[in-house]
Every structure is written in structure tokens, then in C-alpha cells.
Length: 238
Image 1: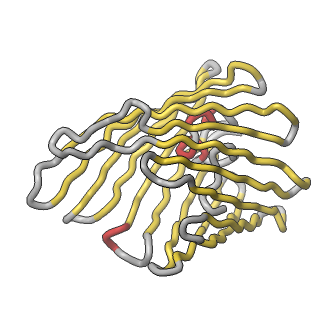
Image 2 (image 1 turned 90 degrees about the horizontal axis):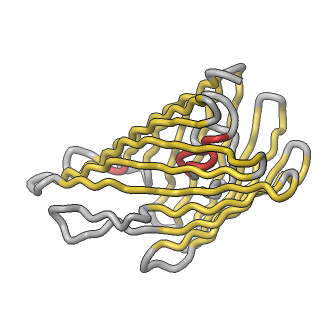
């Protein structure tokens, strides 16, 4: 869906897009693999799990990106709660490590906050503040950039929805992402979308088999080529 998901709940990866979305649904676990532009050096592996306890949603995530020459690793904890039926908030705290061959390693702690509201039936609006604590990598001059995302998702038909995000990252122009999905069969959902600057069309599908679901997504950069992502998820509770 072009990466437009700040207000889109319903799967195990929602909490990574916006920690407030972890408050939806039951317990989930999943794993994903992606590669950008066909380059092994830009491979990412992720695992995530979310559970619920006495009205609180608790999640853990782990991510590895890169190769032996350049590698980023993350471990995160997510908390979320619904304060009203139409209002949810969440926090994502991550420890991040950076390792570059022949250079000193570095680490940082990042904090992300999210909020999601449902003012009308079938309409969700959200905001996500990433790296709001202004984290820095101790052995480098770089500071991990913060960003602010506003998102909306709307159920337009019984089996279809649309979603849109506007992302403002420090020192970069605002980016627009849009997407849509439709459930064409009881077990099959199709998705399309895209993002701007540069324009990158995207498409994907999801197949549900009981508690299990499999998803594929891909997008196309006009100069660098295609990127691919696959994911497997299991719903541990209703």
C-alpha cells in the first residue's frame, strides 16, 4: 500500500507503523524478510510479537539490516493502551546498534510515540513522532533524524479501504504515501499503492489460512529497480 499505514490496524506489523495500533486485536507473532533494489547488502529481517495483559498491549521487536560491512540491529519494546473506545496511545522504545567494518561500533536509544483515534465508524486518524528524544550515535557526529507522520484510513466499502500518510522527516521535503486494499475472496486480499519523491508504485497480496497469513509486497523505484518483502504471521488469540 505504498507504505501508508500509520492509521491502519489489523495485522501483526501495525505496531511497527504506529505503537498505538498494538492496542487493537489479539495476540500476534510474525516474521518478515525484505530486500531493496535486489541488493543483498540491503536485506532486512524482522520478528515481532504482541500480546495483551489487563488492558495493556505489550510487544517485542527485533530487526537486522545490512551485511558484514554495514549492519544495523534493533531490539524494541512496545506498550499501548486504549483510554477510550475511540482513543489509543502507544510508546516504542528501541535499542539500536550500528557496526561498520574497520570503524568503531555505536549504539543509541530511540523513543517513538503514537496516537490513534476513531471519530467516526470506519474512519481512523493517527499521528506518529519517531525518534522524538533526538538520539545521537556516540562515536559519530550523526544524529538519528526525527520524523512526524499524520495518517488516515477509511473503510469505503464492506471489503475495501483506503489509507494515506504524510511524512515530514527532518531536513527533507514532506512525502505522501497512499494505498488501497480490497478483499476479493474470503482468504485473499489485494493491495496497491505508491509514494512520491520519487514516484514508486507498489502492489501486494495477503492469503489467510485460519490463524496463519502470508503476505507479499513489492515496489518499483524508477532508477534503482524493484524491492520485495514477504511476511508470515500467526494469530495466537482472537
